[in-house]
Image (cartoon, rainbow, N blue to C red; front, side, top):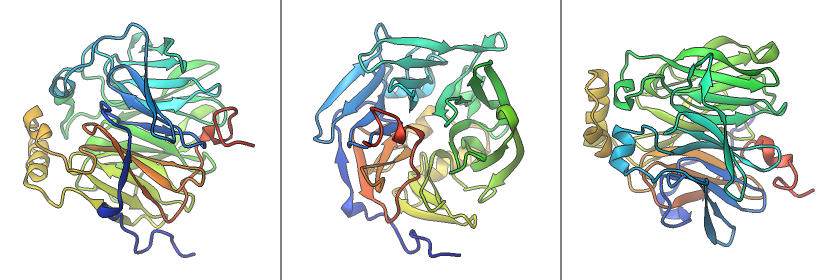
Length: 346
């Protein structure tokens, strides 16, 4: 096997830089080839951050006031809470609204509309993430159908699912996931990789005809011993990701080996208490809020950006800025990288 660029690589905390200021819940980040970033923001929309650091909140028209950090953990009912983001082909921003239980689309001027808020005549549930493929189909994850978020943080409940929208509408293509979170395709879009946060694993599905997901299997370790949130591929085929609450960056190599690239938790007592409580079905908001490192509290996502796709931005649920570092390998080009006018210049 060829040399893996991440062999012997670790993120140096002292070398981290940051961009953005006074952000609110920058959970998901989109990168454009000119250096512009878009960060999900709990005020209802996204913050546009230019390569020069200039930023502007683009808020959806008519959204509710944001909930506090504690309320976001305990309630998240009928409040806007942008979570996963993706670019539509025309540059509009697709928003998985985890608070309002729906998929939305917002123009870069803040005009928005609801694309989907129900499926099979029932509410969608906690819409977590959205992804667009090369055929312009939309894929979204629903973490849970349970209205009470804390009750979904249990080893027993596996009611998350993946849905796909095409010209025939929205339909469920995989069910029974253990708190479905971020999803990513491999380079050929032959496999779809899905985070099961409360399952502490990454699961993958072969993409069949008409979007059917088949041949389900665990990818990498059966359990990470930690809750996973975001994932992203690099161009070598390593799958990078974040351990939320215990705040680590990891990578799963093409051989299936797990490597820890940054550990901002270092076995903290708060992290151990939370994981023990989860195993015993007694998670509380207080135990969750006690967790988090100093780099990007509650690490939630990784985004490869910059003209060479070697700058890695760290999204978080409780940070107010976006840390970043340089990777020894470029990220896999996102589907919008070749869209015009918002992708790579041609």
